Amino acid sequence: MELGAFSVSLAVKDLAASRAFYEKLGFEQFHGDAAQNWLILKNGSTVIGLFQGMFPDNIMTFNPGWDQSAQNTETFTDVRELQARLIAQGLEPVTKADPDTTGPASFVLVDPDGNSILIDQHR
Image 1: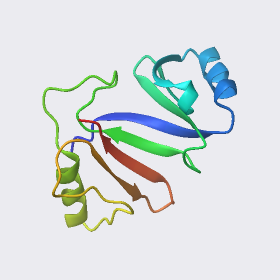
Image 2: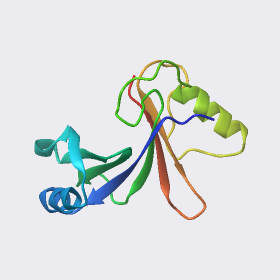
Image 3: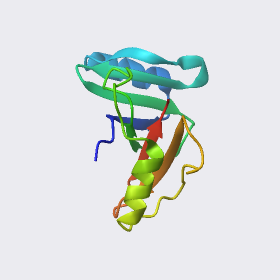
């Protein structure tokens, strides 16, 4: 099952302080909007998102249709198909993508330890 690009979305208290910290670790901003309280940073192929005030906890994020540089991949499995496969395997998303739509959509799973996993398709 191909889930797409992977990143960790961090719920941060102070976007500027977090950005400065991760820049010292070699991360560079390549997407985002500080005025909207979110930034995406990259170090090699490692991607992290910094989100201030958007959600309460850290989230593992997968983006079907994107590579690690947020570039469209030639082929990908649509988020609705991924959701259907996972439901067929007995997993129940806490939020669901509407199966009757096309284009951007997302759903969220929670693993047995309470970690949120966002499957977020942008195209």
